[in-house]
Length: 106
Image (cartoon, rainbow, N blue to C red):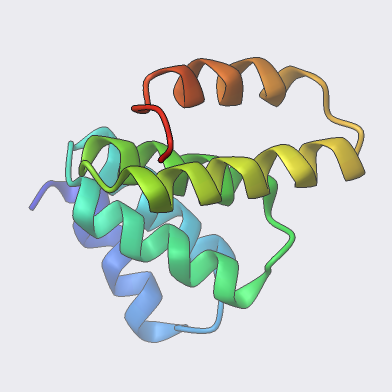
């Protein structure tokens, strides 16, 4: 476990309801290539704050990496919905790129 993950894991343990600690842990896990851990942490961020656009997009990226295409699509579409509602244009390009990597839906 790298130092960043260890540090943020300790913060999450000491203050489990703090979404910022959980998000920092998720980002560290994602950077380390721990897609399963990052996905779980981003999912927890969304439990704490369902309108967290970046957490939805990053969770979608993790799910894509894990081969969980249907869940990835749902997370990315939720991220797109939040981006539109929150009037954030820039994330939509990232979402389109990630959606393009998914196999066609049945």
